[in-house]
Image (cartoon, rainbow, N blue to C red; front, top):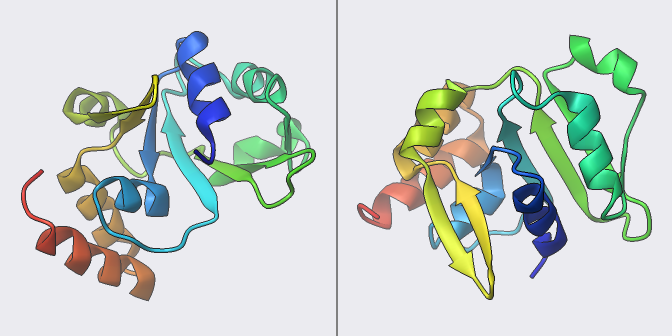
Length: 147
């Protein structure tokens, strides 16, 4: 599975994260194309340097200097060999991480776990964004039922 190595290394290093964005939409059963993996992380406990070092162990490098990251909303990491693989993390979380982590949904796939935002939290984030793609996702997520 795409990004399996990322999920495994995050769990190995006990980094609290939640999958959001298109990848999360797919986990809830809505089939749509997405190329990147969007995450929110528990920034007070896990700093950007540690997160970057952990991703480096599975071949990801930051798109720019980490020193410049503090002024950004999101930050990207690209795979050194597979340039199409990209992990984005939010530096200014669009949700209250601690509450969203309590509400989280986990998916167990072939020997590893993916920690995802709850569907209702995902819908709330997408409502805040208001982009056309997000509005389409919201409609599809609501059609998928309560899970």
